[in-house]
Image (cartoon, one colour):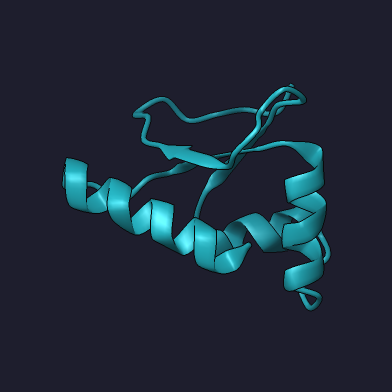
Length: 75
């Protein structure tokens, strides 16, 4: 999971000239990510470490990244 996220984030930055600040995952991907980083079990610590805002979507098939100038907020 981590290598896939690194790959898509690097590709995004190479294409757009800016690092992504949004991470799109489904709940299963998010569980896998949390298992891959066992020392960062709280959501805040995990997202701070990644440097990304998280957007969880039930119907998302593959992880994705994007950049937005608007700061995301929890709903």
